[in-house]
Length: 175
Image (cartoon, rainbow, N blue to C red; front, side, top):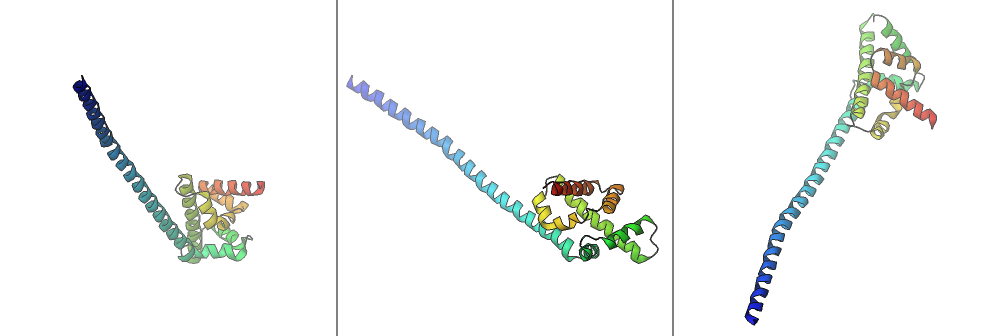
């Protein structure tokens, strides 16, 4: 009887050891997968953050350093909300431009509006958020808050920019 009791005990011990080994065979690979997934996600997040920062730098450079938007930006800056020269551009757009300077000025203004339209579409698609837009371009977007400019935006299919400016100014007035 003693011998059979020892045999039963050995069988239980053996079954226990095999069970633990099988359990470890499941736990170790699973843990390795989760650890690998964690580090992969971290690396991916760093990569996304880096690429977003790089893109924002390119957008900043395009808007503030390249000549493409400088003329119109300066016209807005020089008049700090009076928009005298912008009104002149809008008037020139109503009729056929009669010289190369006017044509270029109109093209520059349209490019300027297209730039902001793109930024707002990116916001709508959740590629960029309101905080970034406000931090980088809030001042310039507020300068679109002019009845003549908004009317022109609406008439010329800058619908995203028109709605965004309208919404922002409404929110600003409420607060």
